[in-house]
Image (tube, rainbow, N blue to C red; front, side, top):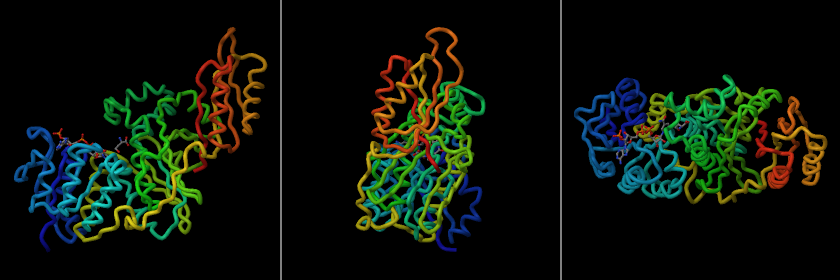
Length: 432
Ligand code: NAP
Ligand code: HSE
């Protein structure tokens, strides 16, 4: 067998330690598939004394992670530190500048700096691989960049954040309020102590920016994404959705049409019969629609040591084999300049829940505003009666397809009605 591929791993947390463990546990099988052994030779983290649950003896320890970029005994740099700036960015830039292949799980770094990093890798002719950055163990990057390479992709979408999917599932199955489900997700270690990246949709948006760049061979454009999280989803919306034949999921959706590319992350109502409606708990799913292949859906674990290490090691095997695809699916000079379509121009159907005082004429006022905005109602449902004077009741409307700008203008007017006592809840209906 040829010389082992020497790997330096920076960051020994969930993902980094998982990579060391998987490389040790499946060493023989991995060597056979890679054509040579893959051996970790150097590591770094902040705390040298911390027990990582994996043996580190005999490995070179770097205090400054970026220093390994110059180490002649490291063929490939694995970055599992995290964060779009700081040590992770310094290390990846230094490694690429030194002509070293990089494997990273860092979606924030790629979403914000993927364009420059892709150009750097291309100019040096070295791989920049990131299978673990999107949907953990699901081989979504390879599927889009290689398996579906012959297709014009019309839409790529998915459940891209396991923490949110877990929270929404628990709210539905156990009738929990958002705050209770979040608290439990934190207790179980799914959500961070500061969970905002997950529940405000930012983590899913980082991943969608990467998927959209690959699906449409377009430079990564995180700033063009419309992003909403799940803080505003209530238990009553989840119950109403089920009654109407839908399930609420936080989806990332990117579409390409003649006018450009639209990319958005927000809670959606998907039909109960849709396969993605049944992806529950911490599971992720990625759906791609190609002109030749039709619809493809991949489902699996989007986080955790095993699934993420599986993706990182798959990238290492490709590098050991000398397999090397363009970072964004095509050379930088061949990437598309299709414009980003703003959210205001999105067209779709909507669910609207209003908490209204149970008085004659309330629905007529709401209907008049929708009529003025050219919005056609599909259904209307009032549950219960406000028994006591001044007690609000939920009224739920669904609309036919209309433009986002018209819906937002109507919503602002509806929210100002004296009989509407809470900020209305709006959820987009998505046929997926
Ligand atoms: P983590 O458990 O917090 O581990 C981060 C590691 O980086 C720790 O070992 C930490 O050292 C080390 N580190 C921090 N600053 C450093 C520095 N300046 N120099 C060297 N090492 C430093 O994070 P993680 O969950 O493994 O995530 C790592 C990356 O994978 C992130 O980009 C994340 O988004 C991505 N990712 C994670 C998952 C997942 O399931 N966790 C899934 C997909 C992608 P100490 O241990 O000494 O503090
Ligand atoms: N925080 C992410 C999630 C896992 O909940 O899906 C890492 O991508």
